[in-house]
Image (cartoon, rainbow, N blue to C red):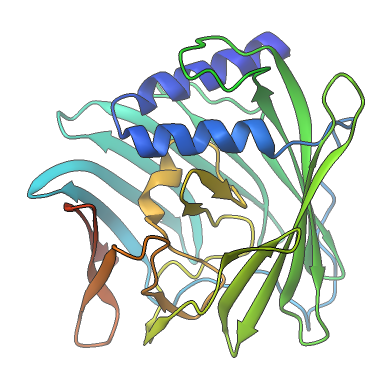
Length: 306
């Protein structure tokens, strides 16, 4: 089991070398800091409370996102849907070679498992993200990730594999209030971090970690967020850390500072020198998102299912 997961991580990170140093370092930091050791748990069936649903998909489905660096079309992400459910996100490099992707599985219409596959199509299910529900709400995610003993970026091998967990708490209005991330290395010393979320209507406006402010006064446009996906798919890159990583594989990169719980599109960037701008279709959905940081321009172009 451990050898399999270690090889998975290495394959993914070797592919990541073709992408960006920023994303590579962000994923490494997340791997080092976001795990809890426990026995793997099988996926629990979703609750039967029809009044509470964790599944929330946009009314307009993304079919493709093209990531351009400057004017160079670097990466392409293709989305496969089965009626209203997202089944697959496939990543292709500029030269047409496959970087693999991410597979989504469901139980009763709710996400039950998410796992990556590599460029040859080999699926790595041992480290899958498993979803656990209570009364229709997502309560836990359990998964396996590799662990390094040091933060030496030149280190090519992993030292261990540990089971991990994210635990969700909700406020009375049904919005996520906290997410606790924990890990227990082999020395048995439990390390936990708790993220707290502030809301303004249907948008997250502040995030703190153990009392330390991560982001505040987050700003949004007034248009629908096409990546308002169900809880647990989101990824949010902030400086050198990945927060709430829900998909392990190259597909994490297409979000580009998106926050998927929010109804509208976030225009705030962590860097005070950065700038984020959108173009929209006639029905208000984004057709492109451009992020400029330190003079480098990254544009995400959106295409939708007809």
